[in-house]
Length: 213
Image (cartoon, rainbow, N blue to C red; front, side):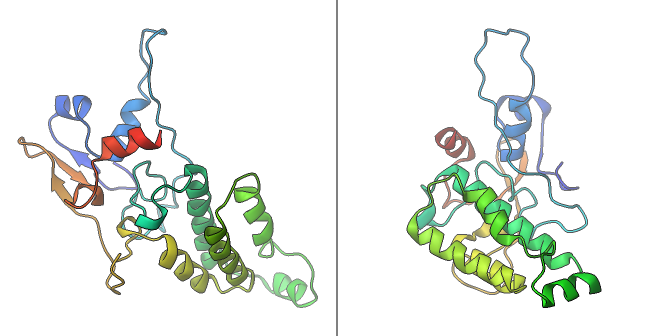
């Protein structure tokens, strides 16, 4: 389970020998092995779990998923840059939910520093040491400009327009209806996995995780 959602359910042996959901892959990779000489591929989940009171749209695991679906034009974008984009999205969401106090509004009016005026510092922390492609950098500049003006909804819309996918609840074809994940049957035993990647048009989870790791 993740954020109160069952991500994969089925016979125990199958779950351990042939995991289907990215979250299951991540959990199993963390199991210690008694042989210290045995090689292992640990899946490191970046970022922190979202606030359960305000789960992300789309798949609940989308903000940390190692097999997250990406737009075709950004499929080969560096993983660290992707992690930064996901981190920026979550920070902007938190800013949307936070109320500015009267003191902060007064300080802002007189050009003084507030806890809401650090979006440029946040950008530097997330991307300062990374090689960000020019196109991506232009979009992120638009996003941070909007967030810096307290237009968080506009900033999120711009992020989703460029980097969003079904995983975020964004229709890749541009429709307005939110895209929710579904349970897919992934074995003859009826095992179910809650993940957009099981749709026919997407590559298998294990192959994507192997490539990205």
